Image (cartoon, rainbow, N blue to C red):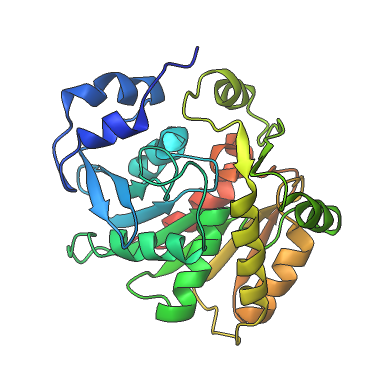
Length: 302
């Protein structure tokens, strides 16, 4: 499927405050990404306007908050959202600052605290319906949930499921020097192609069908990531009961072994599931790799 030229600012301008009706201007956009939300809208965070989606199922038994990864947007998670709906979860999801239809400089934040602030703003909109709540974060989204946990504990969530969470990236020994050398001279670096899953359909769509894909990574984002990594290493340990990490072994985006050592040290009690052969974008992996995550979801339902 060929990419279509969607303008994030124009589409966001058509949205009412969340949860609002679906504006006709977004019909083509939603169809292109296979999204069927019950409501959409804008949630105001301290420095950003966040495009937020609400998906509902009849006779829901749980609430899921989905926190996407860096360089992603909710449109890339349609398959996972459908599977969560089929298992009895209403789903709330939002585009991170600077991503998808949310406001902000594209793919750039000055501080990873912006991700936590966005998360806090969207959590405040979740319905008080008494259903059990689970939070799920892919990559940077998982890191944002860990940041949230440091301040609020589990909050209203029974579980936090982290899919290949980011603390530091793969190949950091090399990247740290590249970042140090390039930061004064370059504002952005080209984004290298990487097949993040074993699913050829998703990989092809990401390369040729996603008009919101960024071809570059701002060096300012890398600087913010480095600062966040050092802040993480300075954290005092916090009870990790209720946090479940799913980590693929065929990982070339985050430094999985190092990250997991740090997460276990900072969040004693966390449970870790290694998924043999799974790649980085676990939310869009083939069913055989994604099944352990869906099995864990079922444990939180009455």
